[in-house]
Image (cartoon, rainbow, N blue to C red; front, side, top):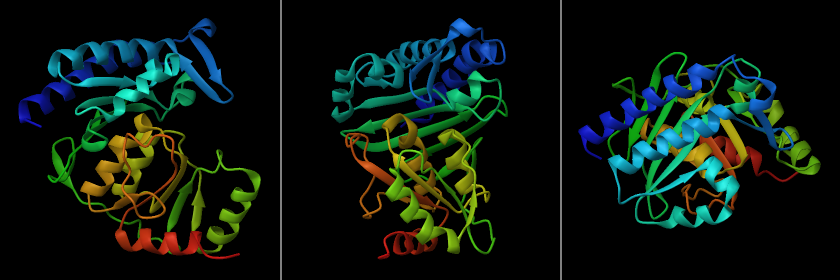
Length: 268
């Protein structure tokens, strides 16, 4: 990843957010919000943002495949590109349910992968103009300043856990194992906000059951490059080409990650 390409991607994210997301924020009409599935919305801003990003990224790196959330929803064969030698992975509007009702947080997630391995990630918050970036082996940055993941310092540690995609038995087992040892807080329903919280001292632990690549690729790299830890529960790396797998843990430190894995996998 060259500095010039990194700068161009950041500029594209900001221009796209201004032209599509901020232009539509709190301005949506009822016919511009559609339910893709139960509790899963798409708005005209999602589709406009993805189209603008895809067009811009194709110009910046013509040899790379492009997998956008909305394109994959329309045609599942798009997911086959996730194993390509270079592939952009786009979430044009993360936190759509929040955006659709006119409240934060929401953001944009973008990653570049090579045969499933995440090389670069960008997490953009249009309302605050906060841009989190990470490139494999070079650290994590917020608006150009290098950051190191820090814990909340709270005892017990703060855990934001998404259990909505677990079945009832799994949900109750997780609560029984985890609740006594952590301070449980609500999730923001926006991975573009949840991953930065792990690095910036707001949350210590996050748990995800559904792990679609556009939701997690950029955030996983950001946390890991900042010195936190984001892995599958079995300790294996998160990859974009293993989109069918479930389960992902992220923590603001390796020690907190290891402790959480031990507690969550304990026998009932």
